[in-house]
Image (cartoon, rainbow, N blue to C red; front, side, top):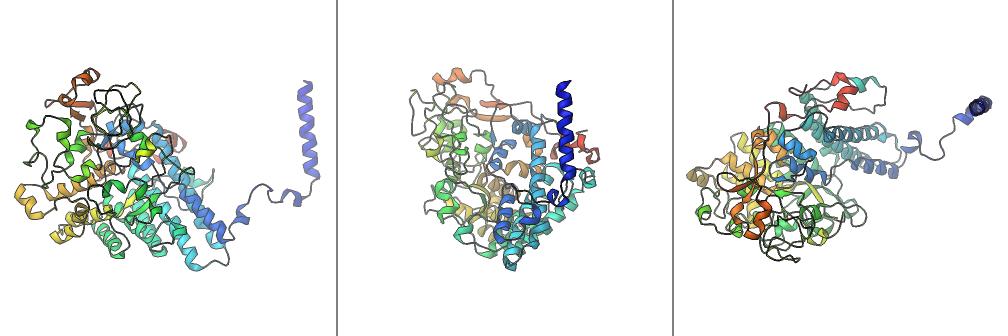
Length: 558
């Protein structure tokens, strides 16, 4: 009781002191922080605020989302695997994390846009640039929210706990999309086409137009997507990256040599920049982690998607005959050159230490896939590894990879232009020659020729989609493409790997329990599902639904 009386005495003393203080004392500004009223005054402060909004630009998470599609798999149980298989509900943590993170970023953007015009003595062009960058970032965040959840709350002012709008209903998806596209138009008008070296990586006019084309494609606004893509092309700012060697140019873009800071990369339109010992990620190591299973395992579905060198698919080309293949390396022969620059082929350098050859010694050159988990080398679940996005020198380190993460490339704009034209029934050979065939020229691949496709009995639309898949593999777009194409049924199919008969006898015991299909290909993941229309949207996260019942729930997830 003595302690309780003492506590009461302290409280009374404090209350008495407060009562005796003057009003001016209570109104003094904080000594350890800059208040909002003090902050929005100088250009330096505005730039800090804009940079704070950039914190919410996605980075390596873009690549991680590839595991939601059918290009890659990481078999251990994870949220992305659950989403890919359709075996999840509204309690999955990733659902709430994405919701919370996007809205945190949106709140920061709203706060900037409400206050930036308070600054004095700043050039109008600079104010417009900063506003354009933040408008883009807000539209970027709303894009992902709408892709994931459909109808979402559209908030354009800074909300605080207790504000009525916090507990309001969702805005129809169509209204949100209109807002996103309008904001991207505004951003494109406010942003410069290029920056000096000191502002490397900042959002440009081209990035705003390019993102507009991506959003418009997702929502079937093909005329809008075409116009935005063509506007990027007409800027004459971007061009495909090349080092002059078709056998390495594509792959090199995703290494240190392809960083924007080198000054040689004019292809990447939007990237999350990383800097050694300052801001880094773990992508190279995760692709070829030397003592565990690779976090990204190419699937048979992706491997089979690469055309043969003559432009024909493996099921049609005389260059590919499965019945005569006798070795693992045969799969990589006479294929689209992007295959070996994306999927690790025998003879390539790698950082995974011991591979699946007969000895247990580290190797600098890759020979065969490894399936035994002895901690001496990188294990594959499917029989395949990635070489794209791998800087071999970074594999041996942990979280020390400063490679740029490419969020949008000029290659995508070219693909979007061709696809948007085809979806409107307007695609010509000339259109292909200024878009998809430029991608093929970079790697020395046979051109896409409409007359040939007709002769070969190949569907033009499907070939354009195939082109997008192989060009953008491991860039986090496959899942969203399957959603917008209404091809969710592909996610319900078994995930398969290499033909088991290609695995050497000494490695066979480690895959003995892995089932195979009728053709002998390993089945890595099964019992998958995709319910239409349910799985074309994520559910509203349980936490958010409980906090605000007015949000409701998406169809099929109740």
